[in-house]
Image 1 (cartoon, helix red, strand yellow):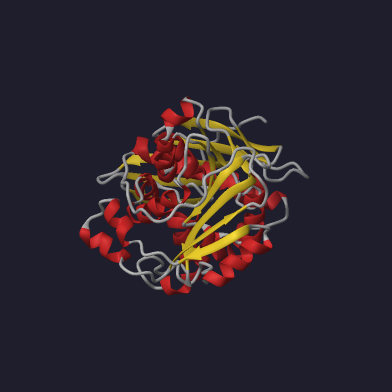
Image 2 (image 1 turned 135 degrees about the vertical axis):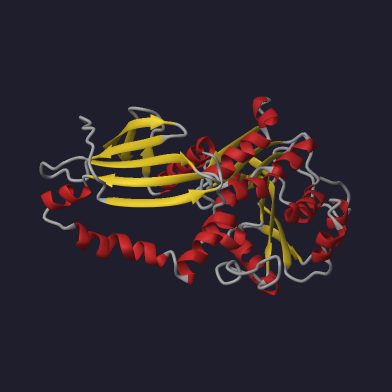
Length: 382
């Protein structure tokens, strides 16, 4: 596609400031832009001459790629008649504190007119409603939940999930129950930043981590680089209700702190069942409604998560085909102490309110006898 570099006033202009210097801001913004496009089925190649695709159909090209300075993508949105190209230009400039990021869209007015439209109509019908929605409690709350927990991304999420302080008690609880050994092959569904995997691999097991956040997949790969290079771990992107693994492949399956986000819980359970070998064990840690409004599930999460009572969770597992189902409402305080959490943090884990642990197994005889679920030991640390 020919690229026309025109100097003209932008049809649309957006500016925002960020705390990072231009080089870092460029990396962060462009990386998250690429991830967001990928989730919507688009692909952006991050280099000069790279393509912008809708599925397999190319409709744009990276006409400028200057890390720390400028990204310009030239697109052809109208493919049924001759129309001008449209240029989407991101500029990064040093500011007194961090960077000033400018988005300029050039040629959009002319392209709209070639298709019989006007920019005012398009802005009123398409652009402005999308912007206004993000300022509503519903729209903004949905974004916060995704950014912080449901699909974590950004620098804050990277820092949190590299070493998730508040998750260590349930990590240690699950490991206490599973008693993993070097003969185990583990799949961690919703593995986040890979901290649980790092601890689990100390048993000598091999593992696969799966998460739908590309940011978390990259972080988990970084945290567990040595195990990956040794061939003991793979971390891949995927959905809980369509796991990218072979059937009957694992002796253990873990899903900790994410089950209440799943839109299709039964689909996810059936996929975990499929992935486990006969005799394989399942451990799911999640929350009951007692956690709503507590530090474990504050707003906006409290009104957007699905909470499961013990009987309900057990019934779901049985319907998915699991046997030997048992549900605990554990006291996590001993595990908070074992994790050597600060006293003010450990205080949040006193008592049994809100936490629930499902343990179950896939019927059948394992090729190698897998160890059974252990009793509480509350030992170990981060």
